[in-house]
Image (tube, rainbow, N blue to C red):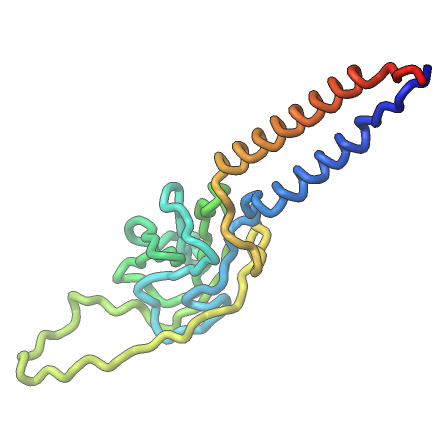
Length: 210
């Protein structure tokens, strides 16, 4: 009698494990937090007057829940007015109309699109106070001149924050439910393959006599 060699299951299991890792790796959602791509005003910018609002632009849309932007003078007084407004990838904070001239520190904290809080700070200086709308003299409609168009240069200088910058080539993540379902399916397939091979080994184990 001769005994037929049974194929070892170790290499097969290793191959299935590697196959699962290769298939699931591209499907895992990106873990990088949102990063700041620019602010208005820029960090360290000198302005003629205090702006009406502070804008912070992110790589993705932050969550409005828990967002906070403080605009404090050198005495620590906060001149922010109202709540933070989220519009697309931009978080905006209005300032009080009577905000005086001076040096200001902006401290922000938002919830990243991946539900992780991120924060940072920057500063600017204003030589003049904010314009008070109530002090603007009214003029007849016939003598009013069209308002001058104002443009704001895009700010692209990255800010320092506590979150790691998002990868430029990171693609959109797949739903976690889809990833789990695919993993379960591959695991079930591996179990079936191992079971079939084990049964075949037990059946073909004793060799036939010559």
